[in-house]
Length: 176
Image (cartoon, rainbow, N blue to C red):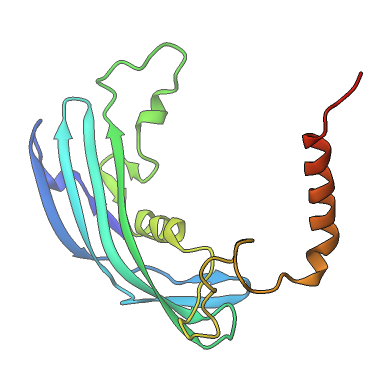
């Protein structure tokens, strides 16, 4: 979805706040398909004009819907998006040796804002490391560190023995 920033007709120091429905495609992770709920999430787009360009802020809440990474049952993960971009208009001097395009948003071409792509990228960046359904057997146990009372997996024993040996070597005085 393209959005015409030029149609806002903002002067320096002016800002507009818009709420828009933006259609966004789903995702594929590890061969599994994940959709968005709603598929056309409402976003709040803030656009402010400054002396050197436009400041853009995008906020939204969506649910990522697809298989749990542990049990493959349906999982809904809430994703909050709050991201900003700056699109320089070329009137501000860029330090020598810097690329003037670095102060321009990759989502803006002239007055056209690629709103759907920006939102999709922001959602992708906010996806948690694991998508879990929330059922007790799928949720990771709290802690999980060496201080837990649970028994350590015996496969870690050789590494633990090596770590103990290295610690004792560090503690013993060295003679040269």
